[in-house]
Length: 328
Image 1 (spheres, rainbow, N blue to C red):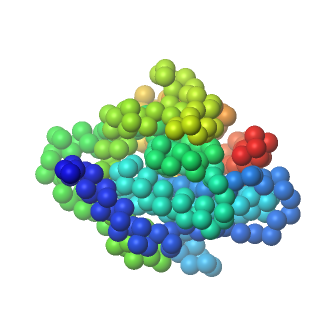
Image 2 (image 1 turned 45 degrees about the vertical axis):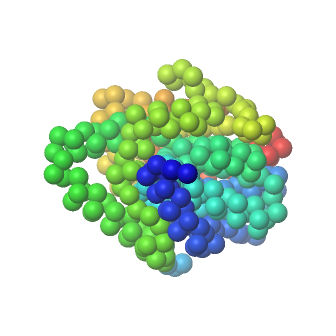
Image 3 (image 1 turned 120 degrees about the horizontal axis):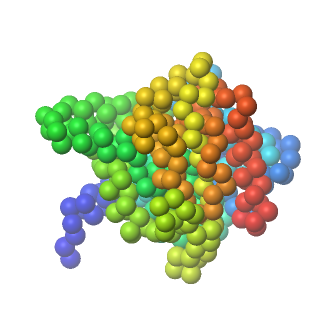
């Protein structure tokens, strides 16, 4: 049987990753003081591009989901953080996540999980919903690149104009990807790294192509809502999303640099600095106009944000309660 080069690469990368899959998912624990966030199924978080679980040491480290997961654990949630390639295609990241979801289900004995993905994590969880719909109770996309990011398109356009830059730039970003892996105390070669594949997946065209194969929860109009409940292979999955539309939300926060990238998207309007509001729409919209930028959506950097905006920690806790009340 003949298979394409991409499929062969996907299988090979998946097999290499699966050999070390047991080291990639991490349960976050804390002494529970309430059952407010105690969902029926585990809540599994998936980071975006250039993401991680935790970099640094226990004493001087930085969590991607800053303060969010411990808070959920204190409120009764069975919560897990997953780790996929910082830079790679949605399909490769999706295969990595699928292995971890299967592992979490085996460890916990849970029949399903609730998946929450930020940024590139949004399409990544959609991949798992299609390939293992029997293991997915719900999908929540946060500031997700469901319809791509014009910033990625600009990068690819520059590459096309000056192809001589492709090799050095991709090499540098691949080194960054390996460095992020190393900073988590892992072998940098425990993941495949491909920054060009990441850029293609996050482009508007690449995202549209992915949506044709993985349409669950995607809006059918330019900026509408997708299906709140949808079925794959007879398995019903609930779909949610929320996002921000802020850029400079705290002058003391280094993520104010997202103001520059926001100008590349509709002249700086209606986006979180990297992702347009309409691109983040998926399933039932919880809210699409938080005064957060792309990093505020995961309570970064170090919780700095607009003091008048909702606290992301509270929003995630409330969403866990929403899943609980839905019987998920």
